[in-house]
Image (cartoon, helix red, strand yellow):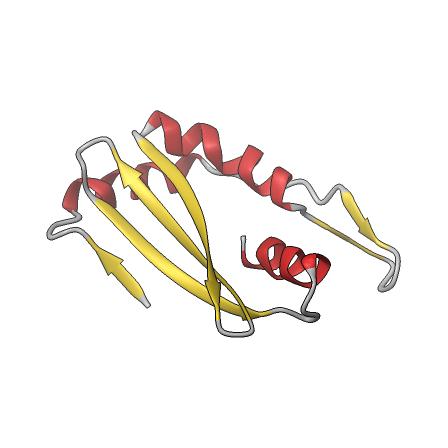
Length: 108
């Protein structure tokens, strides 16, 4: 579910400017199972963070326990105080630290 501050006009304008500056993400990680390359989380953050920060936007993520899994809330915060957020709930593949950690990583 997506939520946002009362107004998001400043944030929306800043996002449009940031999008114009963001280029492709480097696919530097390898998935040996599928024999394919992919962009890991660090590569995605490295690609978008400079443009977002230049426009006064920060990314904040929080984790919460959810039924049989985790919930990852991602917020975009603008220097104006405006924000948007969305929460993704994911099941844990196993009821142990590895299962919950994996769900957190996929959610991020």
